[in-house]
Image (cartoon, rainbow, N blue to C red; front, side, top):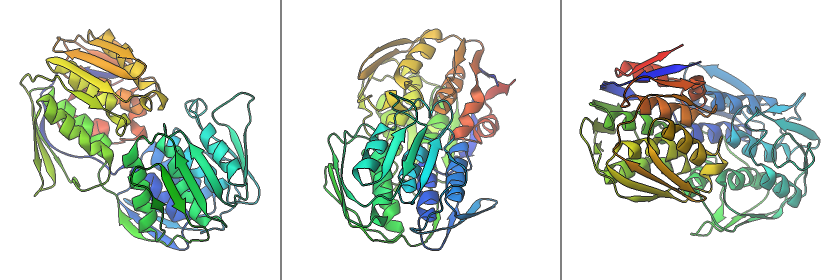
Length: 429
């Protein structure tokens, strides 16, 4: 599907759906709990549904009742899949569910879509083997899915370089159910807020994990059990970035409602980055909302380390292209390992529209303030790239055509409806 985005002025209020990171953890930990968990306001995106399918494949009773998901967990007695485990487009589901397969006496074939079959999962394969399970890639020389996972993992020591927090979280979530204790050593921890989210969800389900303040060491006692719990998923701060950036780069006044400023999601820092760039954003803590005003130029000139918030680069790079001055993004190692190499992709697509972008192995420099021109750009089947480029088209001159724009449903199934409700001139073909 193509989306055509044109210059717009936005007005109104918006609510962003529940967090993808919270939803996936809630579902899979519920599947490993001994009893029934109720999840309110989950993100019904493709990735959320992949987590639901994984829970069902492992034997959980899954019920979807409107905006409520009910998971009848299996505890330690996960069921060996009758067929195979399909993770869709979700790196988190593949990294979290593969170790779950290591709890089962038998072999599970783990795969996903074309992107998952390119994204590295070798650290999880190595960790499963180190903990006494069996895991291997089906293709010689591969570092990605498909993989085969066999149990039963017992416990022990695992080492990660720390580039991708999903790998660490996957072992953290499964290790409490192993027979023996597990120690995790992380060389250079990145994406630390995502580790905090995992620790928070594990605690909600009644399990304790000891960790060092620098996130380089985790000790997890074995023979623990997850308890079911009822929870409500907070709005996704990664998704909030897109309407907020749309509001500041256009002649607009919008309100984003139903936010949790105390939530552990790292991407809530995006709002602080935008304010530091000069954007007119008010945090209304009393009413749990953001008030965003655009229509004026602002001057950046800041340096932002995205080591802990790699998902924010697409949206922030669009804001930087609008701002006068130079914005420098660093700490991009994990950004290059997402659904796409988002550093290279955003450089390529923004340049098509006339933006001044320079990149290196671990940095991106955006010299903004130019009048961008509409162009035909690619989403590269990456949900965050698709949304970023549609937002970019809202202040460019002429039509911006975004190919494969439907990929945004991976994390934001209501994106088109929400943006059109605010008055964005985005049409679908």
